[in-house]
Image (tube, rainbow, N blue to C red; front, side, top):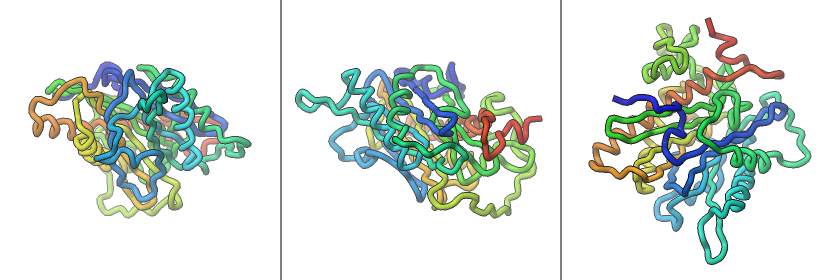
Length: 331
């Protein structure tokens, strides 16, 4: 039976680190996943409006199999520049793919659209490279959820979004973690009482322990509340399993089910929903079919929990356009 890891964060996967930087006035920020060494990465995109950087190199058959970091940012296309700051931080530490005497850090990233969230976007120079560098420099094992990093200005249907994370240790010995920036067109909340769609996968009371919603309307037809390109949930699922890039892509695809369980609706034409996979390779597979089956299920369940935690732990800030979950529902 799965259980939460020690921190209940993606950094329960040994060797992985997360750093965050946010700007309350800007109402945006950056979250970075990196590690003690490069790791295998892959990608699944199911939204209709993704904003991403260097994701083509994550396809099977590319020269470079491993990456040095993954970036989840606010700022839409402007936020993709956060990868520049992370690249500079990695280079300062001598990290990157070796090409003769040169090292080239490999840093794919994705961004959510938070440009209309009430923050001051009248910058003279793009702030995201500096935020990316600050997030990378802050990377460690512990980090804060809710209104932080790439989720600083995130919004969902009716309540604030944020950054969330969760972990699971499987009976087969593998650890799985998830990290998400939740800025969705859809809602993480089912019905009028504040219960989460992800409730069936909750461990303990990690997002309130409210149980499944009794009043969710199966016939509801929610209208879009944002314009095309203004919504996205971007996430990373990670494991210590030794996965090839093709196996890591299946891991990311399975995790998309968790996004669909936690947000309704999800994967719309108006969202840029995507999931990165990261595999450190520390623990070899012993039974490929059974291990991949278990890892895929854990990825979906853990990502659903991370999404709910992002919304549950968001905090109120001056100038907010939406209330937090606790302001609207906490009893």
